[in-house]
Length: 165
Image 1 (cartoon, rainbow, N blue to C red):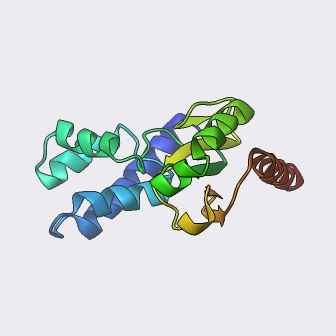
Image 2 (image 1 turned 180 degrees about the vertical axis):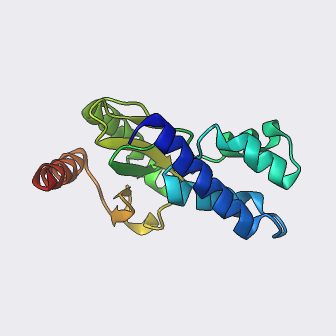
């Protein structure tokens, strides 16, 4: 798919979401969620169209996209790794786990590994407080994660990637 086809596909997706949701009260967040669910991110080129449809400024829409950690402006890696940053997980070693993940994946939080396999994101509660520290890979939760367990999960996920090739 070339750049023109990608832009055309993204534009069509954004317009479909707007047609469905723009008349709802408080439509901005549902629209952004739907766009990200469809495209994997909220393309910067979509911001002006969303703003115009909702009679908002571009700055308002951009502000919401950048304020919430959930939204991203660039496509994620093939797998998204979320490490819980809530208090219970922090108390049980999530800071060390995040540092290990950054080193192991070779990217910062909100970044993607050079090979495009993994995007590393902080999460603010995965609901496993009693079993912390917690993480998720592609929304599959994992509890009591040690650096060794992290490495094993990443290795397993890499094996799945290679098996699909």
